[in-house]
Image 1 (tube, rainbow, N blue to C red):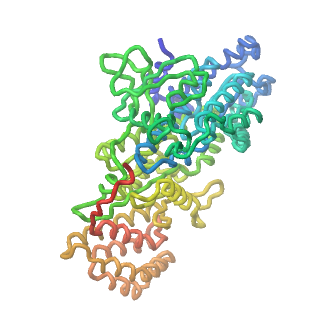
Image 2: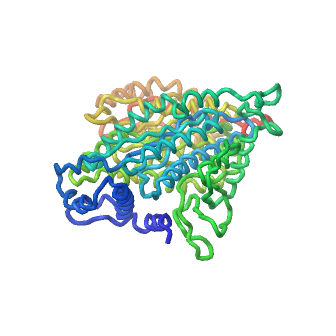
Image 3: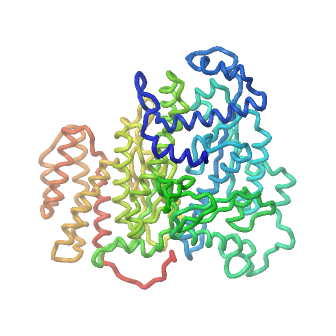
Length: 627
């Protein structure tokens, strides 16, 4: 009886069923095909209702679409609108939080941003009487929707409404850039090129934030009314706005309430209401301003729409079906920065530092262009794009969230966000450095070890009291460093091999990173099994031997093994035979193997990790920065 519920069931049961078998490769699932056809049907129906498309033209469409290079005028006639939304201001909003309850506030804000864009899209679809089948992509602060042609007036109203609500509540900190363009059937079949044109409009719109409000309205809202003048000591401890009671203003206090509601939440309850007309004062009222009342629940509640969180299912106890499921990381772990950092301690040994991990898919633009070319023969570029985007979301928002669940329950990691095509995790540094490699291996397994579609990472290991805003910036810079580092052979004709990880201001290939982890674990084991607790001389000796390793590694890349140099180098490691043998293996594989180890500084990375793992922990009794 409910179309959205039907879509959820179809995704569960038809995602692995090919839409076609026979002469074409079954690369599009029956679900992706059926959902797209349903969305197109809704749009064409509205086109007919508004007189944009005649019934005779509709009858001609099937025959016309079978022609690969049809020249009929209908192919050039605008029938659709492609709309994109881009949420900006995310980084500053996420990490500009007070030290007190910082970790919980970051998570709450991350979930809020996820739901904010979801409900802006829902609001837009409801105003146009369309279903979620028209959504092509939603995640990572971006959304793309296929809409009927000639709905500019409604879209203008939606854009103005959303801008006004966000400006009233966030005072310009968050902004949703919203643009659209008319699309013909031919342009729809060349979807990737059409999408790139729309992106140009979005970039221009982002340079004119809140231009939609109009000059007079913008300045009226920009200058505070006299009755809201903030006196000394009256400012909120977080945002600076006038506080109601305690340390926080009404808006920031509602973020605390929103965050606390996530703890133990398994369901999202949604009610459709008339939009709130006055400016929103709380997080909850932001959604009410769009016409939705949402609540997080640990148990199902009858009489309202329910969505399961973090589960690909619609089954609810008692035989009831949910109205859908939401992919992503929503639940709130009950931990602090200090507690996360201490998970890296082993028998009072170790450095209680936090690990910050940010990972992002490489070369998406190049992949989309390849999809466009693959889809030309069958005019399936749009279907391939929709299917590809959904599978990315399934990996990050579904599979990875499930993979991290055990570590989440043990309070070893804290997912700030996981979804779209990227992730950001905080955890004990031991867990983070291993997890980066695990996630990359799983991604490679899911993509058939593709050299085009890869994953790069940035890792920063920092004290728990390090300001979270600076930590987020540091790990972002480390990720960018990894993405922009390349060897000459990484440059291909149409794309560039990235697939690297940045750590300790070094960039390693994933193969080098795996070697570094192995050397680090071997070093840690040899130190822990020694007579002394932390023989620091071991690490100094490895640093001293680095020059020798750099020389022999360079020789191996030239296809040469100069044994006197190797013997001198190995002599320095004569007391650590396991490490010496591992390095011998690296040199040998460089001679006879295809995948080369190029960066000798992997040894210094391993050395530093081992030094952190075997450092004697001294409890200082300091107050936790993440409380």
